[in-house]
Amino acid sequence: MTLKDAFRQDELPDLLADLSHVIDMVDGWALRNESIDYDLAMYAASLIARIANKANPQ
Image 1 (cartoon, helix red, strand yellow):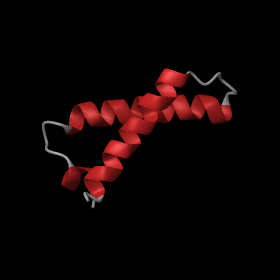
Image 2 (tube, helix red, strand yellow; image 1 turned 60 degrees about the vertical axis):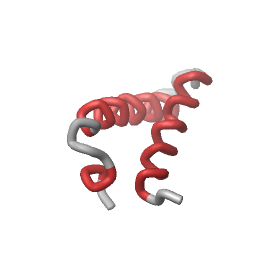
Image 3 (cartoon, one colour; image 1 turned 180 degrees about the vertical axis):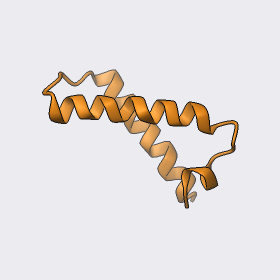
Image 4 (cartoon, helix red, strand yellow; image 1 turned 45 degrees about the vertical axis):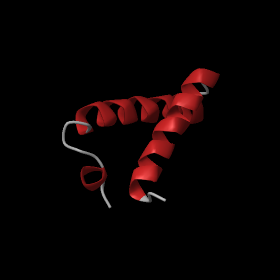
């Protein structure tokens, strides 16, 4: 399943923008030794969980 399969077309622009932001945050933590902000880390986790739940709804 792809993101296009899992999400409606009207959801994709915001989802992709949010996902891009999360990728930049993780890059900062992993590659630039930036501090991890709890709230942003939880936001990243919830976004990934949302994608996972769409890919494998239970």
